[in-house]
Length: 163
Image 1: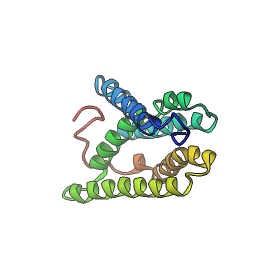
Image 2 (image 1 turned 180 degrees about the horizontal axis):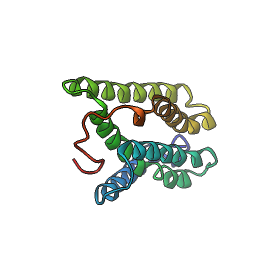
Image 3 (image 1 turned 90 degrees about the horizontal axis):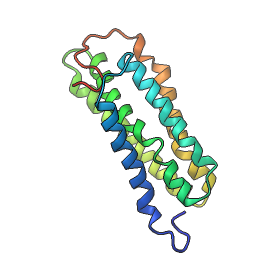
């Protein structure tokens, strides 16, 4: 969308809208206690993150797309926060640093793969619009298949949103 004449500012505006949504989501999420276990919050927020990307599949207007990318933003912060707390809760004592390293590595690999795919799909608008939802679907599928709520929680020092 930003390649069209007069729309170059979208290359910065779209990520800024997503980031603004993420910032607002962090403020709201961190301001109160939320019901349910951290794992359930992680699954819910991951599902909401995925659903938030779906409107981009139907939007062709750059201005509507700017508003639409703000929808999944609030859930990104929740996903990351809950992923850290869930990792902490499910990690055996003495292995926390290694578990966090794997979590960070997983996030980095996902970002790198998404960026590489985005470059390859740059000329295919619909496929490019579907990429964030596809990445979120993959991550949610992995989360659901691993069923972290079925594991024995050895440490539960934190509730998501309360470190």
